Length: 186
Image 1 (cartoon, rainbow, N blue to C red):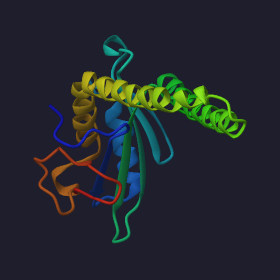
Image 2: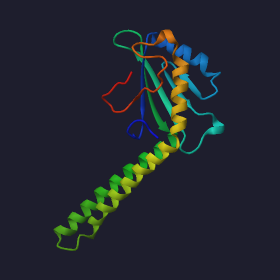
Image 3: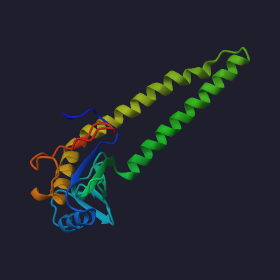
């Protein structure tokens, strides 16, 4: 069961004592031998994903960026998302649904202004139901990929951290997901 409120694209944040370039060098060095994930890294950015043999339609990708932390050290920010093709389809469907709703409301308003039956306004409840269904599908995919999200998160922590590199948090704790955009659970 998910420990945080479900989100379409969960996040993770870590603050590390090492500088960003050292963190990324450590990630690149350890990534080749990581049994739980594969990935690519360029500059201060990395993409991590589950091994190809374990990938499913709902498998997550973890996009990671490391920047300078305000107080020194490095701030790592990561966002879990589905495969880019799946995410593109999801966003296409969301925007198409929004556009269809807009057209339906405009058409229904025009029908009403012309004193005819505004049957096009039926697109509002249908569109809202489809929007809820689209959101629920994203939650089902996140729940199906939850174990893989946990494994990617644990692998990331192992790739970038050592007991001495931690700032302000117990190195035994690996659950650092940020539940909302303003919170920082570090």
